Length: 257
Image (cartoon, rainbow, N blue to C red; front, side):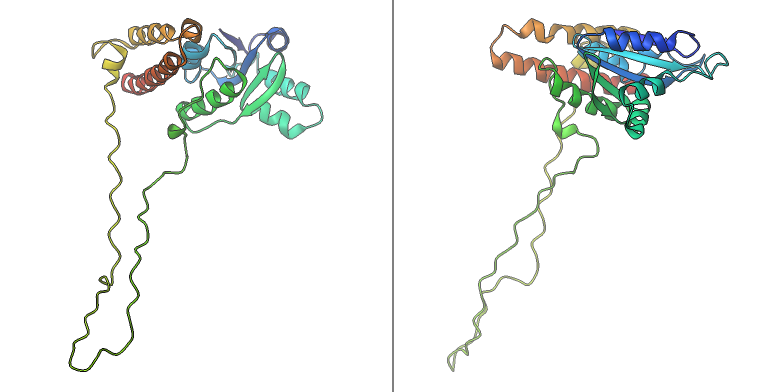
C-alpha cells in the first residue's frame, strides 16, 4: 500500500505521525518534489516497483512538496526526524533527507539517495530483505557501484637458468621461457540479455500502462504466500523468476519512457 501526503495539506504533519505510529510491520517514508506536469508520486520509481513487488510486506508513505505557498512553512519530514532522533541532529537530518525505513513505528534503517531509482531500489530491497524473510535479497552481481571482478592470470613461473659454464666443445642452450609475460585471457562474454517483451509475455509496442499491468500480474503469481507450501527448490525458482521479471520491467520502462 502507498500513502501520498502533500505539504499543502494543513494536517500533513499529524497524518504523517499517525501513519508512523499506526502502521504495523515495515514502513518506508520518503519526500519528493511534485509539480503539476509531473507523474503522480506513487507511479514514479522506485515506489511503483516496490509496491508491485513487495507491497505485501512494506507500506510506503510519500510526502510530496508541491512548492505551494500553503506548504512553504511546513516541514513534516524534518519534524519526524527530530521526533525520532531528538538528541542527534545529524541523524534527524539524514532521516528527513533520505529513505527512512521503520518497523512498528521504530526506525530501523536510513537508505541514502542514489543517482538513479534503479540503484535506490537495489539498496532498499537489501534493507528490506534483512528485516523480512518474505523479501528476497537483491542479486549481488547487480549491486550498483560494486567492484568488477576480472580474471587475473596466474604469474608465470620460469625454471631457473643455470649460470654454470657448459663443458668445452658444447653449446649452451637456454630452455628458459621467452622474456615476456603471457597475454591475459579475455574475460568471458556476458550472458545474453533476454528480450523484456518476451519475459513479460507481451507484444512489442504495448502501451506502458498495459505493460505495467502485465508485469504486476506476473509478479503476483510468484508471491511468497503462493509458493510457501512448495519445496525449497520451487521457492528458489520463484525468487529467480521474480528477479528476472524485475530486470525485464526496468529495461522495458526505460524504453517506454
